[in-house]
Figure (cartoon, rainbow, N blue to C red):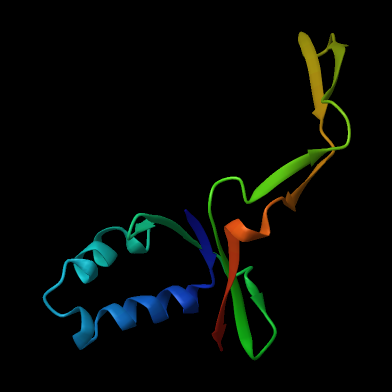
Length: 114
């Protein structure tokens, strides 16, 4: 599973783990070791300030494998041009694609108050 959360959402999770409910458990140790850099409770967590902030809520996302896919509008275009001055070739590749939700039952929003 994967999650993309706002840094404030990650901070809230870590503060909750510091509470009495998790005292004596391995949860806080796991969060301190791996939580901010990738994994927490077996879930890969990424934080991004680009997560939606509408001034009242942060909206992150948690998803499982195959929740999202990539729609390709056409195949990869590759162009090669001789560059005599550079003693070689210039290679330019372009791809027209977009990510899309494929299975809504495998993803959910994580909404936190600002």
